[in-house]
Amino acid sequence: GTSGIGRGIAERFSAEGARVVVTDIREEEGAAVAFGLGDRATWRRLDVRDETQWEAVAGWLRETFGRLDILVNNAGITGFEDGFVPHDPEHASLADWHAVLATNLDGVFLGCKHAIPLMQAHGGSIVNISSRSGLVGIPGAAAYAASKAAVRNHTKTVALYCAERNLRIRCNSVHPAAILTPMWEPMLGQGPERAAREAEY
Image 1: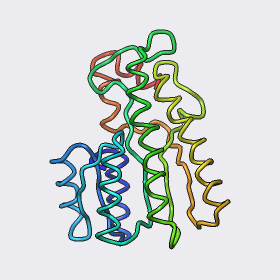
Image 2 (image 1 turned 135 degrees about the vertical axis):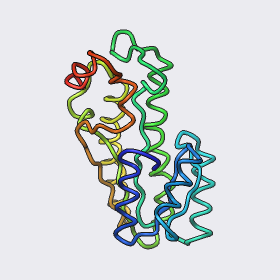
Image 3 (image 1 turned 90 degrees about the vertical axis):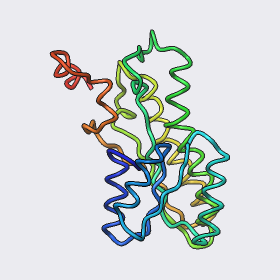
Image 4 (image 1 turned 60 degrees about the vertical axis):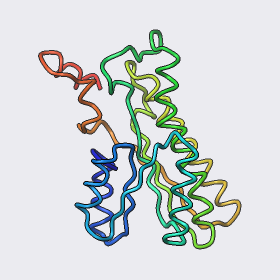
C-alpha cells in the first residue's frame, strides 16, 4: 500500500470513510502513507510471502477491531525490481520465477486464507488485483503473467468455496491494463529504448 495502485486504493478507501490498515514491507513509506491518511489509518508491516506475518496481522486485526470487512490483495512484483533480467519462457531462471510467484500468488493465497476467518461471522469482500497480463500473457514477463492468471482462477475458487458455505464473502479479481506506476520503472528504463519497451509492455 505504499505506492502505485496500492496507495491509490488506500487513499480512495480513506476518502470514502473506511478505516484503513496500510501494509507493506517498506516501513518508512508505509508509516508515512498511513500518517497522511489521518487518524482512521494505521500502518502494519506485512511481508505477504510469510504466513507467520499474516497470522500476526490477522491476530492484531481481531484483537483491535474484532473483524475485517474488506481485504485488497494488491502486493505484486514484476521481477525487474533490481534490474533487467530475462523473464521470457526460454531464459527465465527457476529462482526468478519462484520469486515472482511467491509475492504475486502465494501472497494472494495467504491473504484469502487468513481473511476468511475474520469475515465469517458477518461477511465481507476480498478483492484480488490481477492484471490484463493474466488474460493475454507477456512474452518478456512470463512469471508475472502466469501469476496473474493464477490469481484470477484462485479468486473464482475462493468465491465458490465461500458460496458453498453460505459465508456471505465475495471474492473478485480486478484486471488493470498496464498503468505507469513506479513498479514498471526498472523494466522501462531510460534512454531511446524506453518508448519501445512502453509499447511492448
